[in-house]
Length: 312
Ligand code: ATP
Ligand code: MG
Image 1 (cartoon, rainbow, N blue to C red):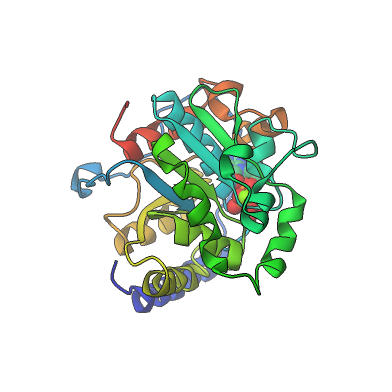
Image 2: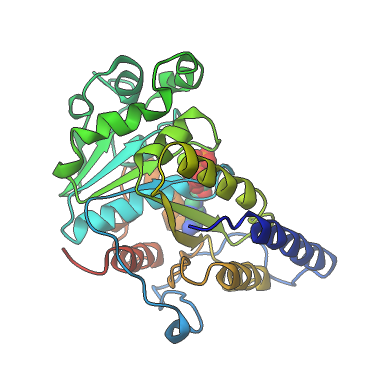
């Protein structure tokens, strides 16, 4: 990947200008969460035929789902893309690298009763296979996290090869999986660096909302740092537009801006903002189990096809 920080700063500036315009001229009737009507055709790039064809990297693919902004859909994307890849027949592992443990609980794991977790893997060299648990979806496995992982950011500071702990742990199992999705925490600290050092690719979810583009330059600069120092072949391969609300001009403007900057990275499918996607985690289920015909389920299935090229 080339150093795109200059153009990303420009993107952030243009993003701020859009938000200022929208603030001064709000759209009538375009507030509040969208409801869940009968499944409609998923929102896609309005000009899909002009989008470049993606060249798919070889398996196994290890994808860090990262964005230091909080609440932008990292975990929702890791869990649901993971479930849909598994449903397509790919053996898939979701690694929960966030002390909040949301990816683990969202896949039905009780994080209070864990024998071993990612904390033990990162800090105590426990083999990752000792903490991996099966989920309720065939082919989908989870390496769970719990709150003690929060201490890892500090405990890792003096540790030997502290940035490469996850990479070393995954080396033992990478051939057992087609896809490994790493759910990173909302920071650019040592856990996220471990995620990026272990990954072959970075997937960035971008919310089609106010201030979505803020911090994107910093994220890409950090990826460049990881490339230079730890992982030269790391690639920001995929940008996914999430929480898309077709009723707002802002959603479309953010999507258009991001596509103009990263035409070859942005997925055609956009994940809609839907209540069902936010309800599923409290039932410990990915959306394809919780509500298989919902718009969110359809969109994440499409995303899995786009990311993988189709069934295994
Ligand atoms: P954090 O930075 O805290 O780890 P995150 O980036 O992992 O957050 P999520 O936890 O996936 O973000 O999502 C934040 C909130 O938004 C959650 O309550 C989630 O259920 C909800 N959410 C995510 N995607 C959607 C969507 N497409 N439609 C509606 N709600 C969504
Ligand atoms: Mg999260």
